[in-house]
Each structure stands twice: as C-alpha cells, then as structure tokens.
Image (cartoon, rainbow, N blue to C red; front, side, top):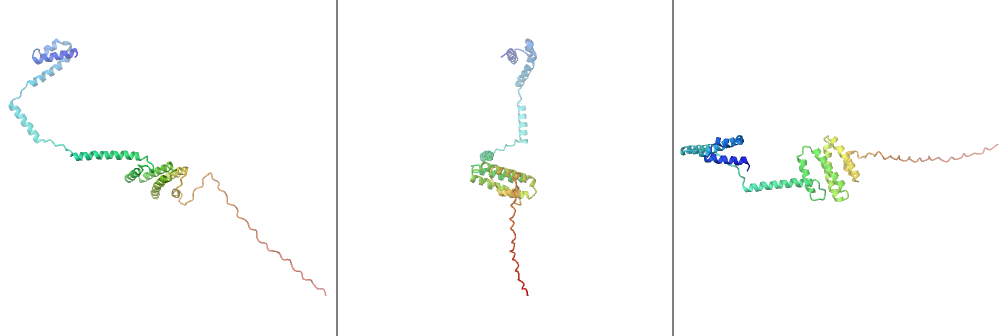
Amino acid sequence: MNDFDLILDDCLTQITSGESSLDECLARHPEYAARLAPLLKTAARVERGRQVKLLPATKSRTRARLYAHMEAHPRRRAWVFPPVWRVAASLAVLVMAFLVTGTAFAQSALPGQPLYVWKLSSEQVWRTFSPDSVGVDLSLADRRVDEMTVIAADPARKAQALNGYLEALARLKSESAAGNDERILPALESHREKLSAAGISVPELDHIISPSGANPVPPHVIPVPSPLPKVIPPVVPDIVPPVRIPVLKP
C-alpha cells in the first residue's frame, strides 16, 4: 500500500470509531485533501445508512407493498425445453453440420469415388431450388466436361461422366429451344474444344451445335478437288468401201 492508501485507511477507521471527524482528517492531511474528501464523504453516508433502523410498522408496510407489486406483475416463467427436445436439437445441429461439411467435400469428387453420388444428389437439390435453371445446367455441364477430361484414360469412369453430360445436354437442348441460344451455344462450343483437345467425341454435342449434321471444315484443311470424269471416245463405225460395177461396152 502507498502513503495515500494508508492515510485513507487511517481516516476511515478514525471516522467510523468516532475518534475524529471528516474535517479533522482533511486538516491533518492537506496535501491529500482533494482526493480524500469525496471518498470520506461517501464512506460517512454509507455508515449513516447502516445506522438507520426501520420501525416494525414501516417494515410491514414495505413488505405489503412488495407483495402487492409481485401479485400485480407476476413474473413470467421461462420456457424450459424438455431434455428429449434438447437432445434432438443437438443432434439436428450435428447432422446439419455434417451435411454442410460433407457437401463441401463432395464437390471435388470424381466418378468412381465414394462422395460422387453425394455430389450428384447435392446438384439435384441445387437445381431444384435455383431460380436460374439454365445457369445451373451450364455449370453442371461444365463439371461433367472437366471430369471427362481428367479421367479420359478410364473408360468406365468416363462413361459415367458422359452419361451425366448427356443428361445436362438434353436439358440444355430443350432450354435452347426456349430462346436461350446466346447463353448456351458459346458454352457448348467451349465444351467441344475441351473435349476435342482430350480426344473425346460427343456426336450429340455436334448435332446441337450443327443441326444439319455437317461439321464445319477446319480453316487449315484445303479441300482436294474431285477427279474429272473419264471421257469415253465415241464409237466410229467402219466405212464400207463402195462396190464398183463394171460397164459393158457394146
């Protein structure tokens, strides 16, 4: 304790015991008077409050008013969930956290991996509740193209991704007929470039991009002209020499 704390403790003891008054304590310590005054005045008020004793009649009136106030303003009982409900709520929170975490991990799964089915299921939920079905189908088609290019060397897994791509392609085809060509066709052109670079051919994709079935000729390929037809010379009939008939002289 420092000097001020010792002086304050000493003044409080003297004032409480009645040995000294507030003014006398301040007069003995003028250098601390400004700091001691508010603390000692507060302590004096608290001490006077302790010395006040209520009459029995006052206590009875105060108790009666308190009871009347409690009856007029009953305390609402807080709702307490039963233990079974608390356990169910905790399990629901854990299940929700598990679903969110598992769905996040499943987005990077590839065909043949354990979480791939979970990935497809989450995509169906996404498409069901999304207001932009065209945008979702384009994103799903992009995913299937990326999956095919990654697992192109595995025919079985590539076939699974291809089936998913054909399903998305069928939906995009119907959506393209509804006037969404400006969004769909550029994306499909990008798909064809990626798949072609990976050595994967999807005839259904070519048919949507080129409905006539004629694939465009690459600019670096020079068409070879077809050979001219062979000319068959006409058959010239043989010329029969004229027959000379001798003339008899008379």
